[in-house]
Image (cartoon, rainbow, N blue to C red; front, side):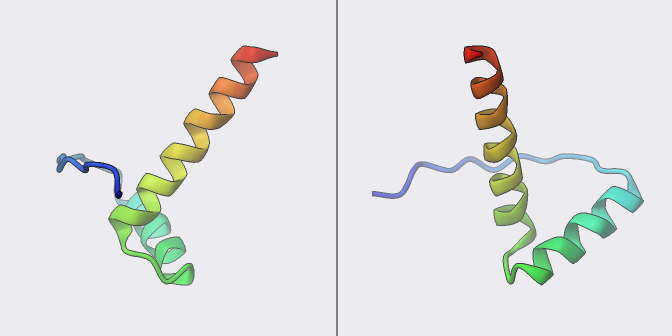
Length: 52
């Protein structure tokens, strides 16, 4: 079963948005999907760092 998703609104700096959009396109993902993937990876890295 897919996890429940919630919609949020964020504001990004123009250059950040442009770069993230390009990276999402390169991975053939939607912007939302790419941002979600990047945030998950960041949170997992924080958890691993915390455990060390």
